Image 1 (cartoon, rainbow, N blue to C red):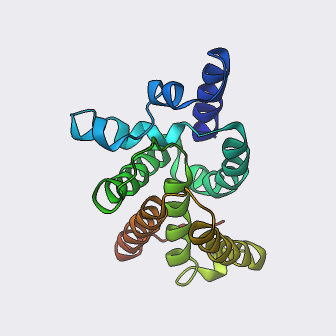
Image 2 (image 1 turned 90 degrees about the vertical axis):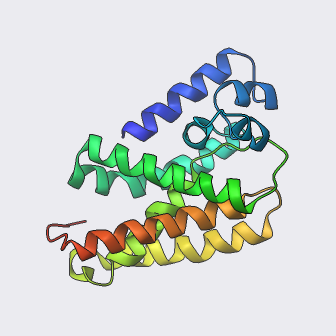
Amino acid sequence: MIIFFINVVVVIMVTSMGSYSSEIILLFGAYDQQLVNNGEIWRLLTYAIGHMSYFHFILNIPILIYLCLPFERILGSLNFLLIYIYLSCFAAIFILFFSGYSIPLAGSSGPGYGLLGMYLVLIFPYKDMFSPFFIRFIIICVILGFMNTFIVPDISIAGHVGGLIGGIILSVLFVSFKLKRLTI
């Protein structure tokens, strides 16, 4: 829930300044390649707590809540926050190196895809610990999400792919270290 509350606070702050615009989302830490190249590296993280519009926020948050809550419940808020930071940065590094976006980017879908990547790895060795509904939900989210990524314009393909790869890497490490207690 910590990620949800941070995102809500940012939406409230943006709303208090008027409405969404490039200037305002940049003020709240949106990713901008030129600014990152000029040393504003915090944007590799802060982009993930803002959104490009109210619609973007409303689209991302329900999925994130459903994906975040099980991990946060199992790992604790602080550990989950560290995972979310890692996934956010991993997705942003992909954007930095594999994307030429000249417009500001913001949103939690990069780390959201990271969570999907984690679940994709974990549902196989630990499938007895996941409900059949949850397994189907994850698979459908990945399929529909990637269809959306490549069909809808102005979506950061690098951010989505980077997040997914970051989540897969993190889950492989979890499985390698025998993450035994996982019940979702």
